Structure formats: C-alpha cells, structure tokens
Length: 486
Image 1 (cartoon, one colour):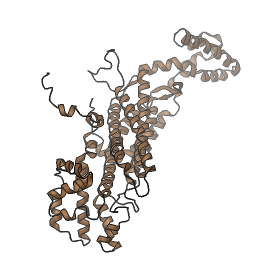
Image 2: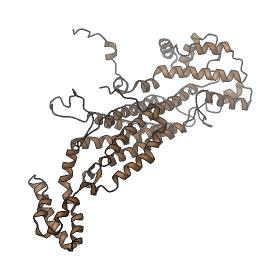
Image 3: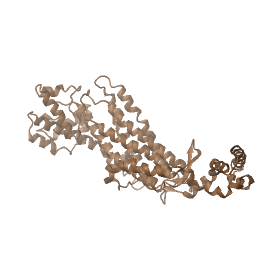
C-alpha cells in the first residue's frame, strides 16, 4: 500500500457535493451548514421564550439563561440518534436541547410548530445568503468598470450573428456585460429586501395555539409575532401563512439567482469566443496546464467553469416552480426534501460563479495588436460607404462609384475566402484611376476611431451615472481578494 493510503479514507468513501468540497466559499458553506441551521433553531426557541415571558407566560430568567448558555453546544450524535428513533428532525433537536437544558425543557418550542424553526431559519439563510452574494457581485462590477474605463477608446470589431459588424470599443462591450450585472444587483437587493419573516403562526397559520396560551388575548399574540420578528432581524412578517410561508417566496429568490446565472453565462461565453480570436484572455497562471495532450493550449477554464455552473443554477429554477405549484391547501411535505437541495445549491452555485468571475475580471488580458489586425482585415469593406460619400463630395456619381466598389469588393472577398489571402480591397482602390481624387483622404477614411460612434462617451456616462453610484453601499468590501481553488 502507498504510505498514508488510509488517511482520510472514510471521507473518500462517501459522495461529497463538489459545490462545497471543491468550490464554494467558507462563508456560504457555513450559511447552509448544519451548525448554522441548528444553532439558529435554538436562537429561535430562545427568542420565542423571551417574548412569551415578556408577555406574561410563566417562564423564568433562569430557564432563558440556561437555553442561552447551550445555544451553540449541539450534540449532533445525540440528535441523529433521536431522529433515527422519532423520524422527526425538529422533535429530535427539541429533545437534544432539552437534555442539556433540563430546567427549560418544559417551555422549549412552547406553542410552536416545526415550521416555526424550519421556515424561519430558511428565511434567515436566504437573507444572509443575499448579503454574502451582493458584495461579491459588486466587486465583479467594480473590476469590470475599471476594465471598461481603461479600454473605453480601443476600437474593436463588433459582431452580430458572430459575423463582423460595425466597430465598437472593448470598453463599450464590457459595458454590455456590466448592464446585465447592474440589473442583477437591483434584482438581488429587491429579493432580499422583500423577504419577510414567517414569524409565530402556529400549525396551519391561524395562531390558534398562541391565542390559547394567552387566553384569547389577540393583542398579545400580535405583539408576540412582532417581537420575535424583530429579534430575528426582520422588519416585517408575512401577515398570512399556511403551515409554511408561501413557496412563491422561493421562486422569487431563486429566479434572481437564475437570472444572474444567465448574465454570467453570456459574459463568460463572450470571453471564450474572444479567447478563440486571441483578442482577450482570462488570467493564465505561470505553471498552469491548458491541455494534457497539447502543451501550447491556453484553455479558458475559468470561463468554462462559470458557464458550466451557471447552467446548473439556471436549471435549478424549475424546482421552486414545481414545488410552489403542488403545495396543497395549507401545505404538503413534498417540498421538504427538494428544498434541502435546491435552496442551498442555488446560493452555493451563485457564490462560486461570482468568486470565479471576480478572478477572471481582475486579470483579463487584452491583445490590441491582434484586435487591430482583425480590424484591418474587415475595415476596407466597412469603409466603402465613407469612400462613396467622399467620391460624391469630389464631384463623382454615387451609383457609378457604388458599382466600382461592388466589383472590387467581390474580387477582394474572393482572395480572402478562396485563396486564403489578406483583404486587398484598399490596394485595388488605390490602383484604380477612378479613385484618384480621394487617394489623399484614404488614411483618414480608414481610421478605426471614426467608426466607433459615441462608444467612448457612452462608456463614460454609463459608468458615472449607473455603475459607480450603485457600488457606493459596498465600498467597504471592495478590496477583498478571492483565492481561486482548483
């Protein structure tokens, strides 16, 4: 046996999600961890006990202090054994918490249903997940904005249908990417800010158990709901729920993440296409290997990873749509297993692609000479309208000039497509006596900067008016670097 072959053997014998084991950040992994989940359950039980005590139920300070002293020390082995016996995860943790809080045991989970801890914890995780993602998205936008500003004036071939079209600039193209990401920031902020707490609603959302606890005092039940909501850091709770909060909330949250996935996929596909043209490349480490068989290759593996994971993020959108559509009456339990997978995976996947995209945008490499060469190959064709206008100004006939250029263009195109040669349209024009009156203007007529329209001005205005102001709330997190693993 190889030395150390037993080391970590148990872990290697089980499937581990690569979202966590290979890619995701520590903070997002923790956000959906068992530790975060079950300590949040305990905090929610403490919030409930505190509010019930404040509103007059016979709960003592000693009971609350006992619960607070054991909020973090969860015996996961005992909880697992309890769940094996009871087949109920919430009651397993109630028993486990009660075991280390014997004085508080009678009042833990008092009046609550399982969704009090389950759904409210999910809403906290969704809120905290957005708070993790938004600064990362802001950093990507910041890096791309710097890139767009640097290359605002650099002419490059525009493409429609992936065929050469009018010139744009490298910076203006980056602004197309930025515009989508700016929309994503607004979508994520809105989805986070629209989140409410499920609160204290009881078994079918009627608050009947709490009304009984408070002997029919509706005001106290309403105040209980409000107090717990505020303790959990929410401004509002949903006024009506079934046993669960509406699963359309999950649709709203995951749709913003799927939309982000579409943005990232488009951006990284563009980078992959430009890498093939050798105009722009993602960062490439000194010792990085592009291909095991072809040592010369510089594969855009980071952009490919983003596209790969973005597809997964987009595909996950079907889960909450299906789940919300089949929640019979006050609820069914067929949402539970699905949401354990789809909700965390959406945020973990979004987290990974943003970290990877930050790495890409911090190190994009531009090759102006290659871009210039591609422009030279196509610009003579694009300049024909300018040449026609110059001939007319010099006293020529538009239709006659159009026919001359049409014939010369076809001949030049044949050289490019059939013989594999360079575009020699300019040389053909220079040799034709018909164009003698404007030969001195050709250099000016073929200056790439005369073909980019208002692209530089658009970049400047867009960055100043829509991008930089959006980044203001995230300035404190702007200097964070990412460590790209694997």
